[in-house]
Length: 118
Image 1 (cartoon, rainbow, N blue to C red):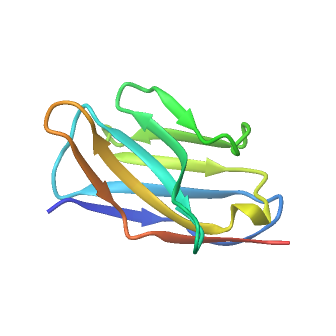
Image 2 (image 1 turned 90 degrees about the vertical axis):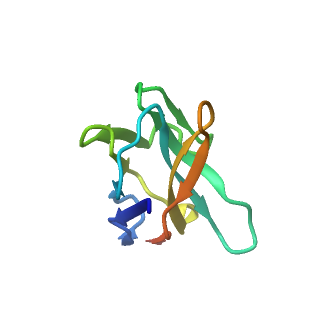
């Protein structure tokens, strides 16, 4: 069974940095998209960043150049480097693996709390 293993969440001070990683366990995938989404209680889950296996990246409008997403470990890992964090970035961050073409699918990680203190 596909499992997304998340790591790197925690508490940071405003202006600080944090690195989130997501690793695919159980099987190999190709031609897919990996990304990070975040959610605050009572609000919709929103895109933070995503990157295709081909290297195409997309970021949420709020990122404003502060974050960088990359693929590694033979396309089976996604790393999100977050800089200049603000209290507004506080949320549960979820890793996602999906594909929208042949044999589409979508998998989610369990979620990792990121708290930015002021």
